Length: 476
View 1 (cartoon, helix red, strand yellow):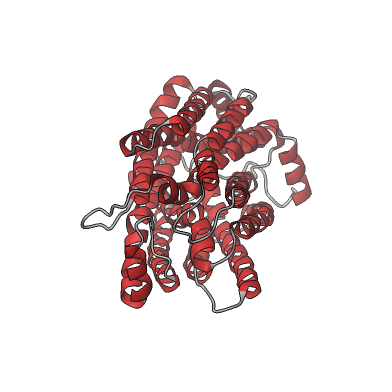
View 2 (cartoon, rainbow, N blue to C red):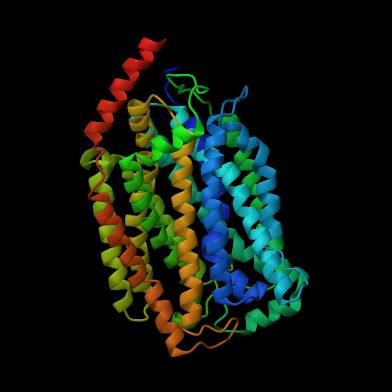
């Protein structure tokens, strides 16, 4: 194994990959429900069911992508080639997904199911190998923490770019190609973003071009160094899966990760509705065109980024597990407080900053702990199933967002949400307030309880790393 120290350029290059993924993922997480109800034209319940079905089976597909990536062989390594092969399909499918065809209601729903499912498949084909790359760049736990921090930092930077650009892009293209819709949007005080179909397609297309560039840079600037102790051909897929299902820390981390991502999914999906229907502040920042919802998202991403940057140093002092537990618990406590605050923008923005900062501590630790589980399983079984294990992290991510988006759609329907209405009922607004505060807090409590049982302490991880290094040296 090459023991070369990871350069700053390579860490940045690795971060570019998640910047690209997150630019689209934030569109899916924060805007897709609104797009399907108020632009595409299907009900909230139908959209929620579609999110659940498409992402549930796609999360299973992630496992097969991980298995395939583990067995891939090329001059570029196992995982990097996928960044090269699927960058352009990733962007193209994004535009197709956010296109509104001139079909009837049944045809539209079929189109939505097909295109959204294909988008999730392409996302898996590039994101699962990308995530697995973390376990292949370095075997040093501290370097992995650093790489994970760079990854999540750039993920939030990518999200930040999406929030800065998407609404102004959609407004620009609406004004250019659909002036009637644009004027209607401007006259509606409560409206937060244009519902012009063509503007959404063009806006997502611009973001897609940026994603392609970042994926190509990630491919070019990274290298795979960590090799497996044994040859891969003597281990079957069935054995890999059996080893994984017997891995107790993996089960715990998937569960806690699912709860943590469900927390984000529910809060993010309902934010546009919450500000349009409950807060009702008509404002667009001069020179940017950002409305109150976009500013709220940007504050959250800035706070997330602060948490991500601080996570390595805090976890180095207190340990990953303890830092994770305290952070997720505080995020839940402040989420409960969010429900009881008055309709006051400064207080809303302050709590958004605090909650998002604590949530920012959690995500890089989650990815770093999945890399630790790769080492744990290799020590126990002699098999380094990096792609398979990291595909499970992608699986928990997609399940979290699937359940979160589905719940958001279903709960809006339960509380009688009416798409594209200028005024929602008090019952609907109450449901939106619950979804942005109390439900996320419940998810935080579940994640905290799960992490109580996680057995891989920092001391244990170091012992595993040292034992693997001895085995690799003896194997050379």
